[in-house]
Image 1 (cartoon, helix red, strand yellow):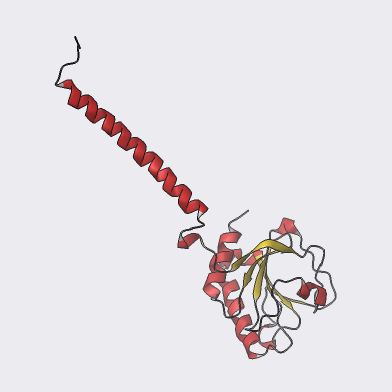
Image 2: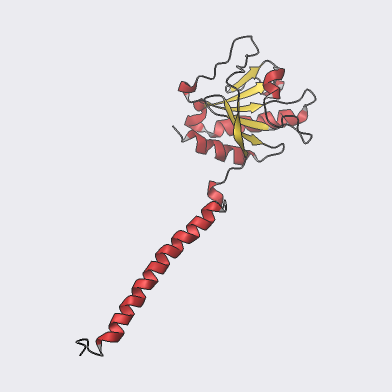
Length: 191
């Protein structure tokens, strides 16, 4: 004879179904997270505006030279991030607008502005030559050739270079300056 009373059977069955439901919720959430992770989905707040370069272009072997002839060291210990512009020789009014926008982005970094420099490959427009963060570099064909998709028919792309000398991001011509600021602000938080 079974010692379990008939009144306890529905209670035991309910407890089992509760346990199965808890396992289903837990493992279902994990399965959903795995599917989202491996499908490449990311929340919009975590997406880059610029194109993340895979693999990044390595400029460490191509040290730039400042316009005055002095070498420009990458110096990773300073933790300085760089925005690089490599315009074509025919860039005129577009470059003035671009340089003024980059100057505003640099100013918006506030106390972190000391950790960002703007490198201009060639002669920058006269309108922005006094900007504190602007470093004019000599036109170096080998350095320009190392930049991914530098000769874009749509205009002048902009690049983000990490403190070690790797080009990690590319911004297509006509990009949104707010996106560059957001991406670089995220990178500046990395110490």
